[in-house]
Image 1: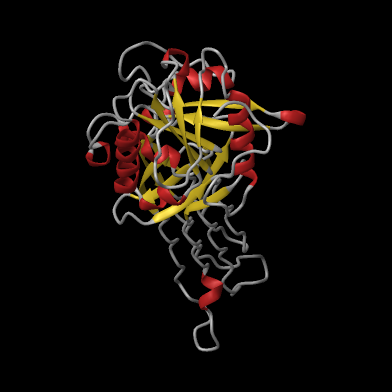
Image 2: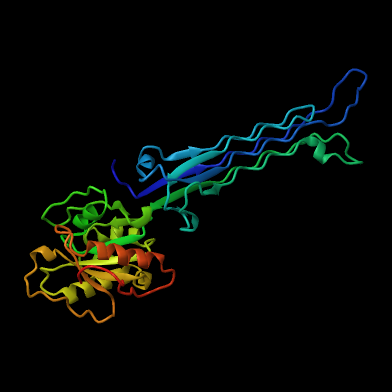
Length: 339
């Protein structure tokens, strides 16, 4: 399935039904009073989060959603039926904004969460509402109100516990494949990953967490270079960040600093998340390799997705960080593998 994380749609709530102008007409009641019914309310438009969806692809083919208008009132004080609502399923993690003003209308993060985005028009009142002591036969009924209409910008931000960040060929796809059942495309050239990948990592006692791999970041990604700016939004919801730098990098500390700079330029709040530095591809590192001093007291872990070195320790560290509600720095686990 093609991954699509943005779309624009039009939503139109139903108009309210018109009120009815009618008078009671029965045998032996020559001058019956007004008996027009009220119009029904127009249908609302809702967005509902669904875990059965993982992309906004459907909205590339259907862009207009319109709720039913309310039925008109009838004589004998018969009120019109309300129009049917429209419920639009969207993936969990979808943000909806009014395209004209940019105002956020919905941020749906949980299965079944439902938000009203366009309100149906109120039904018009029938002519009995306008009768008075001095005006007992009003020949007027109220028209139904118009339903709300919006152009919506939909944006999908993946919901994951851990986000993997790194330059192209840092080993993100290989790592998520080694730790989960995800099957991302893996090759020895830049930008193999063109769309985000999610993997569920099994942990002890039947527990698990979700890991997200985004396309590689390059210098200037926050300003639109490469693919990074399109997908940096997918790590905004993550609880923990794992920054990956390959062991064959000419300057690991400088590369790590550049990645932090790009994240900060995109959204400074990303640097407030718990994070760790992973030195990847340790299977090709020379024997005399030593982890660099990165200067911000973050945990540095050496891993190899090929040999499995450090992966059990990594799971322990990630789980501890996920469970920590407020911790900014990640403590070293009491038990673990190589660092």
